[in-house]
Length: 473
Image (cartoon, helix red, strand yellow):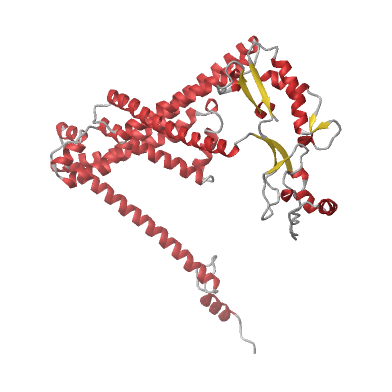
């Protein structure tokens, strides 16, 4: 219970001025100290215990103590209690739900419902119900019986809380302000990300402006800044609660952890979301964009896709990031895989505990090697084709590497893709044949025609056994 929430602040010299954010600059510690030192208790909250007072009497005595304490405070303010009311609410989520009964019931200063139609405690208790009927009170029907759960009212399932005036209007205002804050935050983040990303993209690339790449770069910058600000605020909050010696030790420890986490997170992001997607962009460029440029054979497509290897890596980077993210998601879906176990072991815990070197050896270097080898294979095939034709020169290979001469390179890409498809189809056919042969062998074993540890059919073995046995005379 927070007594500060059960009253309103007022400036003595300007009572018409609303007090905003009172916890930040009002003497709330005075109110809490008076409340903790106050001897009497509220009967609506504590029940009929010795020394309990009805809510209105309790507020009157507590108001006098608060006024006396605030009179000694230099701020010319007053704190008025009891502007709202008390409501009975559930204390647990598993409270029985009875059709026709409401959960929020307004109670008086003694903790009893203001309207007897909502006095469920008296309705479900036989003695209290008889007494209420003799008094002429109108009670709700008792809770229906249930074979699996007791639906009767239990006092321990409910508590009494303070509700400020105009609760519905306040809730609507909170919801409206929340949605407004979400809209303002989303729009400002989007605009600020585009502004930062466009400036950064213009400095690091000579390609035409790409808003999706700019937005991604801006969001990444804002995310890094937000994490740093949150970490700094948390650190300063923890430091403010410690002594000077503890503050020095905590500062050194946090500085070491922050440096370790920063370089490990930066190196991991640069390798797995920088180098690996960029090298994977070469595979996309060689196997898809080259074929698209060669098959389209139009000046517009040539101009749109005319770029070097480095530009292709930068332009296809986002596509590679998407594939890396999809791969990580799939590894989380299949935790029994060796790669999933390694990923869980290497990146479990905060960033300063990550095994970055091992992760680069296990994940990054194999992915980069496979991507480079896959992208280089069509160039090797193109060199062989040029050598066979007698056209292999340094200038021809340089034009192929610069993605200018695409005739031979497109032919080699088609050859590599065709070979891969044929090998994959052959491999799948072999697996299918092996599965079918095993199924046929199992079927022959189950019907008794063939044993797994013998090569001859069961009929031949039985015939030879019968021939070896002499006939009885």
